[in-house]
Image (cartoon, rainbow, N blue to C red; front, side):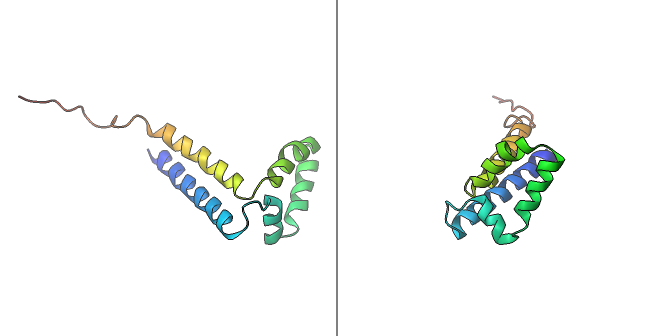
Length: 104
């Protein structure tokens, strides 16, 4: 129950973040450009960490395509994943209540 509420709050936060990104900047702005607006050294540092720490193919096959997508898309995807987890953990509707018995 608590985990479902936590995931619901995280889902709402990520979806609001995605809406704010799409509202304040042009919707086609890549995530890479948004990260450069925050800190211009963040993307090269991330590239170095991924290529040297994990694998160069991970940078080319996973990280670069994500950075080329619109900036609102990754927070939306993460928010939808959290939403799915919250719905999955919440269980069937009304399962926590006792069944009602009708008296005549």
